[in-house]
Image 1 (cartoon, rainbow, N blue to C red):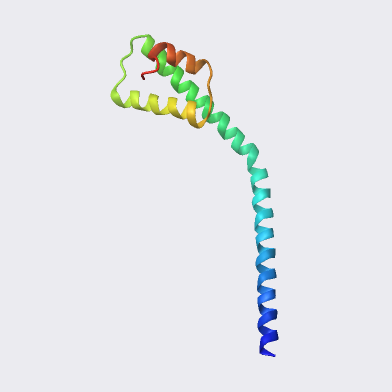
Image 2: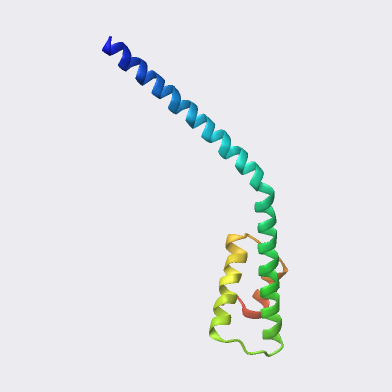
Length: 104
């Protein structure tokens, strides 16, 4: 009788864990679908903010406005984020290359 109880307990536990895994996977999928529009909006905001910052920085540079070391670092970090993480390559990239070339 003990063996039957142990076998039934193992089967019940396995069934519970399997059902739990299926439920967790379904919930994760639903949450991902619900968050997609928000993620897309955040991506678009990020791209727009990077473009604005970079265009303003480069326009200041062209107009002879001095930038300190920290401003240059932030500009480079923003440019790297814009081109690598956001995978955006537009007129901003062309403008950057025209002003600073590939070495910067």
